[in-house]
Amino acid sequence: MESPVAAPSVPRPAAPPRPEIPITTTAPVKRERRWSVAALCIVLAAVAGLGAAAAVTSASDRTRVLAIARDVPAGQALTDADLTVAEVSADAALTPVPAANKASIVGKRPAVDLRKGGLLTTSQLSAGTGLGDDKQQVGVQVKRGQAPAGTLAPGDKVLAVTTPAQGEQTNDQDVETPPSTIKGVVVGVSRPDASGTVVVNLAVSPSDGPLLATRAAQGHIALVREPRGQ
Image (cartoon, rainbow, N blue to C red; front, side, top):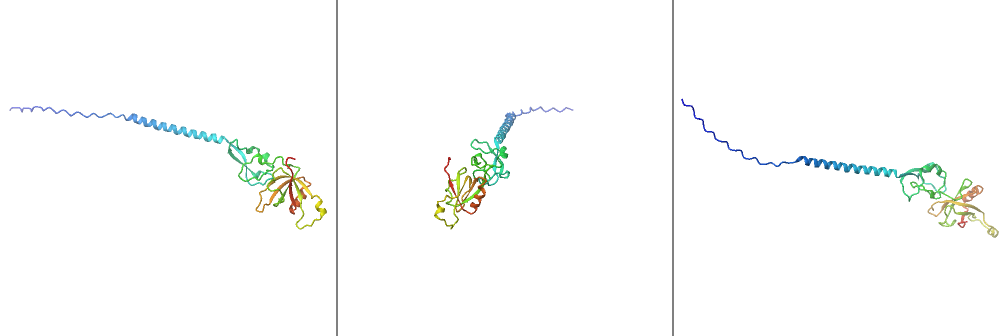
């Protein structure tokens, strides 16, 4: 029996060449992104550091000073409750009283009305007004026409002149007799009310205080400002 004849081998067709696939370099892109994020973080940290440094510098430039806790009329002695402590930025244009001087300020008298919320300055405190421990202070209510309009200021020397009561009759001899006067120094002047009446705080000698208060209560006082500079 004849063996079968093997079929001739057919050559396999060659595989088509594979297309070249471009090699992508993804790692550098990732590195660039990472460097960008790192750079951004560094910038943000630097900005935050500068902001914190500015805040610390600003806080270090602030100083503790005295402020007015409530309204205080001119001439009234300052108490501990009248003053409070505030923090303000250091400014050469401002001259508030340092908070450390509070103990020495209590008991002093302002030459002007102090308003709540304002800063206390040394220029607001009476100096050279003649008001000391040996003086008494009397508030004199002065109506329009009983004092020079708008000219009285702390430190002015005045004469508190006794005026006749309303309807009181005077004779010629009384007219020629100089009126009774009391010397005083203006400590402060209040704001005028709707009728133009003001209260003038006067510093007078202890012997004249009760008499001036009695006459002022009766409304028998007019003020004469003496020449300044004397």
